Length: 284
Image 1 (spheres, rainbow, N blue to C red):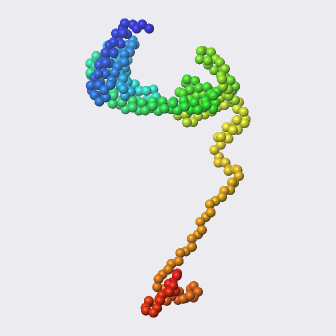
Image 2: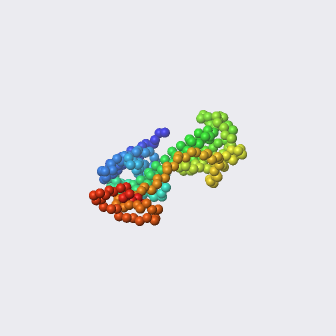
Image 3: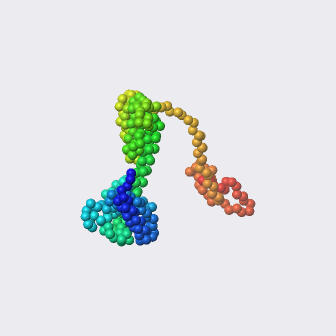
């Protein structure tokens, strides 16, 4: 489409503005350099600034229909990913005739501090959404392994929604027409996955009774009584119990009387002509 000369002039004007503002932002914060601009074509003039960290700023004339200074005033807004779950909106307005360096100072002082925090949170939300989408894609792949007739269109990864039909359904042939599916199902229904693909819901019509019984049995979380046959096995022999070891005390003798009825006597001293025998030892 051919662009009107006026639009070309506005695009050139705003592209030059964006280039200078980006350079001024780099100069104000050398540790966060990297701002660039993207040329845009529209009836009122606009330009977008982008940073490698994922930040984006849109500069445009929001009220170009107004006369005088109001019509020349610039709106500058921080752009966050659509996956952001908050409500924060970072926007300022500046006079359109201000030098680019002054506009950059206003952006750095009034817009960027809060916007950077929101952008970091928004980028985190976006990463979570992308991880959830990958999980749903993987979950549908597993479901199609067990039910090839499950149809998942281009939007299934986003919506978490799939269909299956009894018999052989008509599916798109990729050329604007339809063809008979290569796979069939025993019932018709829908599958809907949760956000992270870890759970889902199933609705099916015309399910054969035996299949329905099997499915419900798998959902039964009650503890089932054990059944089967006891299989005996041989156990290893237990080691013999050890008896109490005798305690021998030198210097005492046993009288030879029954246990509990004898006396303990001090063993005689070893002198010439005497000998100490085994009876001179006592066992207790």
